[in-house]
Image (tube, helix red, strand yellow):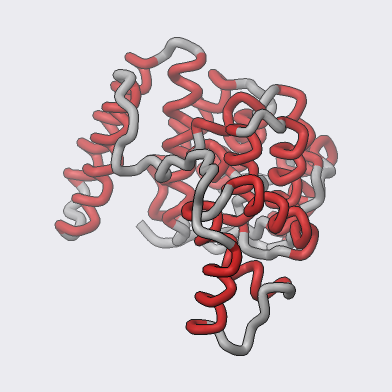
Length: 274
């Protein structure tokens, strides 16, 4: 199965959707002929973020078996997280289990290289386990925790001087480097205060996601939402058919703030053009 080239007319529609003009973009998308798997991916992303979970599952069931028509592997992995979550929320675990088993059986019949089939097999097995309620699987992000007596800022500054001597801790680039370490090893309150100082300028999505997760752990829901908004604004699609940051579905600890209203807000935040 070959990768399908997306024509400019469809790319322009996808840019419209990413710009937050959802109704206009969907109306234009409905007029496009062919490209059914690609359109189904787009509609799945829209429906997951509109809390239309059963319809989103239908969209993905139509699209994901044709995943070799696009090159970005994160589409499949991110949609799997959303699909599994939707199945659990809507009490459709058995349906999802049947889909995953059928999906893998079809991949096995397609004579893929062993390493590619094993990648599919691993992902499917993990999501089948997730459907049964298992936690802390190998595909899940590493947990974060609130740290009261962590590594001090002076230690991080020394680390920066040693490994990135051209950077300073009071700069955006210095913060981009240090935050990933601080969130895991430093005092949580100090790390989040340091994040907030540079948040509007940070371009590393992980920093925003980790900050949101920690803000939730400390009970600061509005600051968690602000960190997610910062992430969405700098999110960039790997593939044309990605219209919104599906990666959010990987983080179960973020689900408490992914309300219907907030997900719809995320859909309408202007994002980067492809």
